[in-house]
Image (cartoon, rainbow, N blue to C red):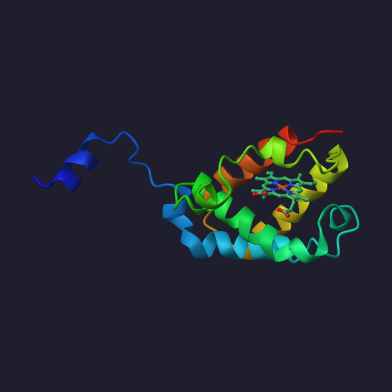
Length: 135
Ligand code: HEM
């Protein structure tokens, strides 16, 4: 038995991850469909620095890829996610949180990901966005 096969037998994580299901392309299309809505959004646009949209899109994409089972590029480039700390400088009200989730919902409709993957991502966004409310 090769060592790779042995490792697979010992693994308790044999369920496919969201990354296994949708790959880099799935995350890229979801996050692109989310981000192109931000610059014209009256609640969210003012929170983002205009010249940072591309960078912000890449950071969210890399974070999600890492969080859902793909390569850890986000950690390599940015370190520990510490999302609450990284959002502390943006005033995140309930209304801003709700709009963020709403734009992500529109992005889901556009990206047409498999329903299993959508369910896991939705649950995460819903909870994480609530956790980030800070004013
Ligand atoms: C599910 C919820 C969310 C996740 C997973 C998330 C994730 C992220 C990540 C990974 C970054 C980049 C951090 C860094 O590496 O510096 C970021 C930045 C940012 N987020 Fe969020 N976020 C969420 C919700 C929100 C909400 C609700 C708001 C505001 C309403 C928000 C506003 C911002 C802003 C303004 C930035 C700065 C953009 C930049 O990176 O330059 N986020 N977010």
